[in-house]
Image 1: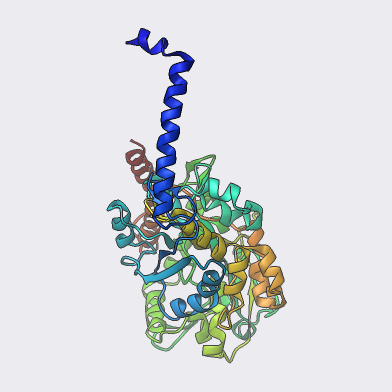
Image 2: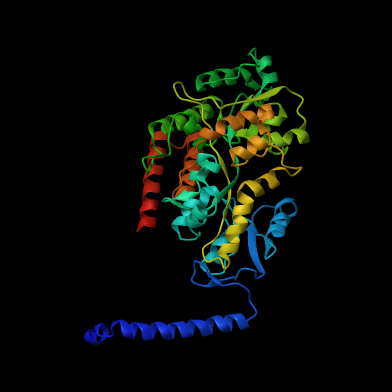
Length: 455
């Protein structure tokens, strides 16, 4: 048989080509009779995508409630549909699962081969979902679509990349700073215009602000390291720690251990029961603790500035970078959202047109100019400049830190590592383990989980 195949020669090849040509002509003729315009496109699943000019409806899933759907349709989706009359967008609310930013329904839809075309997605989850094969690789779309990594802050772009492949376009971001109560500082004999810049200064000033009431409970609090955005993740970076180095996860980094030990020190010094009682009482008010006027210092995000119109605080306050341990620079870390195309999406080309519109400059500007934008920070420096966000001195504190913001490691075990950090944080502040032992345990657990995934 091998010999016969070789003797076919160029004449045989010509006959085959002629037959193929006739077959192709018949197929094209039939396609013309179908009434469809243009030629079909094969998507990444090997299925024919819509032909140019066809009317296509893409399904867009999002996890946000409130006015998001109404406003996003009005200010962004309607404009997209005007520019792409052959693409309609169906918006579908799909809530997150439990206390996470993830959706079990989305994961099930992907596994079942019937996912939406686009999803609004927490960037923090990209590493784990990309590792599962649940997201479409957008690298070629990005390379050929006029989108550059330089259009975005470096940290938020890097969070959208897993193993050198792009799986999302970033959209919306936030970061953390220190809010400080000038009125309480002055009451404690401190300079209200000179907030702490180091952890040592923070400890000293916080101690001066603590006030116990007649019942032995705190009337005023200087600082609680785990309040609001004061997670172990945050404090570890403030102490010069690291969660990843040279591609290895490092939850038990020596400075991470110091950070957890420092947090536990507050629980011992100021009595964890009294601190918890104070936090619980404030929680029942439904207010952010800082806006009660009873907290000296708190680490929190730029979104807290949106509360001003609601709470109208009657005390003097300010915003400054979070203090760092002696010898280390002040840091911030950023989180935020993105747009992804789930694996198995039926209309990947149209989905990409939508993702590129909403998450690049045009759509980002449309969304950011809506009347209710408040103190949102976009992932695109050029847009923030065009919007003149830095004219707001409090928001400027957050903007100035974005170029050097940290992000959590992009890893298949990102959520697992986060949950482990929260678990040992709770144990440490409740006196149920030493920092070194607890974080060594986290390292062991994370490495074991990673080994399972890589099998």
